[in-house]
Each structure stands twice: as structure tokens, then as C-alpha cells.
Image (cartoon, rainbow, N blue to C red; front, side, top):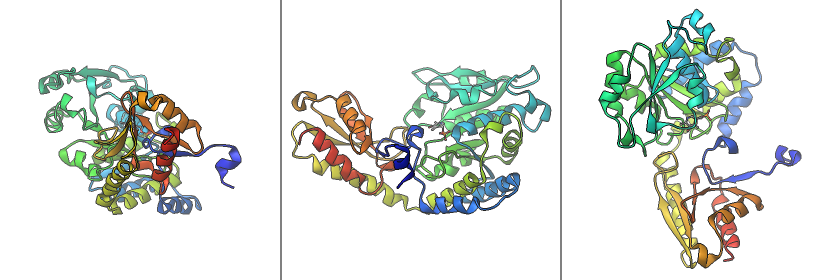
Length: 371
Ligand SMILES: *Cc1c(COP(=O)(O)O)cnc(C)c1O
């Protein structure tokens, strides 16, 4: 009997996204095996963190790398590294900053995501730039003061037109000696993003371990400049300061390394094709059904270059609303979680579906729609 049955927990068919509230992603057997292997022995955790970082840096063509307990923790630790560096007295003060410490982080007003707190919890305040018409390089440059600890970009290709382009911002950041950090937590695929931002000149790029990488759910990856990665380790666990509650176990350390290896070995063209095939499949299944149309939706929810299937309904003709459909999928057996799209549509994301689930969703939808 599975542990979830024993606990009375329904498992979910996730056609939504690599959402933390649903468990992130499913680890491939190679990752689970690496974690089991790591679980059998005691090790020096600081030494292991360093070695795993070296290996991931090599694999991702970066100067250095660090495994955190998630991308949100990566945001906190990289902010701490920019504020306290390798200064033990400053590290001990966080999150209460004194006048000798840098205390501002620059962000685009229209580049914000729900993870502000992970940066603010270090004690910094945000300085916002730009508006809905865009942001000029001058606005960025004028926002930089001697208090600026870092510039953060929350990567999302669908919003980039509102921001100072990376190349320009990186040049400005370098001119003023301010680190530029890219939160690319959900920006895999494409796998090249593991080195793209840092090769452009960003000081650090951050990723979730439990999203596209399909590593342990409570893992995250920071890649970039060696000096900053050292400051991250200095502020991070197991040291009893701001990062102590963000500990990373030996299993996660080794599991994320295995996940990066696994991810870079996948045929990403083939994976993309499988998403295209899903759109074609749904189009075929629903093609003769009145009141339903199937569309290829691109890009994915955080701007990633992946197609999803959007299914639009004629609510009047089918006498059912979008929310009633989502509700029935949620409460039926099996439980299916997909996202709504517009007023009368739903969208199915292939990234988190397991073999056979595309068909299960199609059948449930037909059942709900009485077709
Ligand atoms: C998911 C996400 C995070 C948080 O990642 P975790 O690994 O769940 O901590 C941070 N920033 C962005 C942009 C995200 O999409």
C-alpha cells in the first residue's frame, strides 16, 4: 500500500505546473537512487556542499555553484551575501542593518513576483524603477547609490520588454560595482539558461531544484561568481545565522547534483516534441465536439518556451462554466489539477504529466462535458 493511501491522502494528476503546493516535480529514479545512496553515511556537510558545488559548476559552465533548500532560500542567501559578504560582525547583525551596511535592492516595479519577502527578510528595502511603459537605463543608473546592495531581476521572458535589457543593466551594474542577480527559478527549459544569464555577465543566477530540474522539491541552485558563492556559504547553513533555518541535507545535496546530470542528459528536442504531440492529441480528441475548440498556447505560464494545450468552451452551449469544470476535475476521482485560461478556457501543461495521464484528463473532460 502506498504511503499516501495509508495516510488517506489523494494523489493528484498535475497538468498545471511545477507548483510547490502540488509537490514541485517528480524525481527520476536516478535522483531517488542518489538520495538513497547519500542517506547511508555521515559526511562533513560543509565539505560535501563544496564538492557538489564544484561538480555542478563544471556541468553548468559556471565559475561556482551552491545548493540551497529552494530558490526562495537562494534569494535570501544571495541577498545576505551582498549585504554581509564575508564579514562575521555584519552576518551576526542580519536582519537588522546598521548605517555601515548596504541596505537597498533595486527591482523593476513590473518585474515583481510573489517572492519579495525572501529578499526583504534580510532587512533591505526595495527601490523600484520603471512603469508600465518600460524602464530606461537612466532610471536604473540613477537609482544606484552607495547603499545599493544588489539589483534583482525576476526572469520572465513575457515581461522583459518592460525592463532595462540584461546587457545594458549588466554594463551599468559593473560600472558601479553592484552585483546583478537573476532569479530564474522557473526558467528551465531551456537548459541553456543554466549558463546563459551568467555568461551574459550576471553575477548570480538562481533556479528551483524542484521545478524544471526535477530534483528534490526542497532544493535550489545558485550559479555564478566564486566570491559571491563563498559569501553565500558563509551566510548559509549550517552556520547559525540568517541561513540556519534553510538547511540542506546530504540527500538534497547529492540529489540535486544527480538531477543536474540527469537534466543535461535529456533529449530536450524530444521532450518539446512530446508537448507538441499532446496539443495534437487533444485537438484530435475534441475536433468533432460542438462547443469546444483546442488551441496551442505558447509560451508557458512563466514565459518558458513550451507549448501547452488550451481548451476553450462555449459555456452556454455546454451549460457549464470554467470554474465548474475545474471544480469537478479537482473533486473527482482521480483528482486532476489544471489551470483556468481566460473566462471560458482551461490549459493543460505537459511538463508535469506522467505517462498515461494525458488520456485520463481527456476522458475526464469528456465525461464532465457529457460527451
Ligand atoms: C518558484 C519560484 C521561486 C521559489 O522557488 P522555490 O524553489 O519553491 O523556493 C522563486 N522565484 C520564482 C520566480 C519562482 O518561480
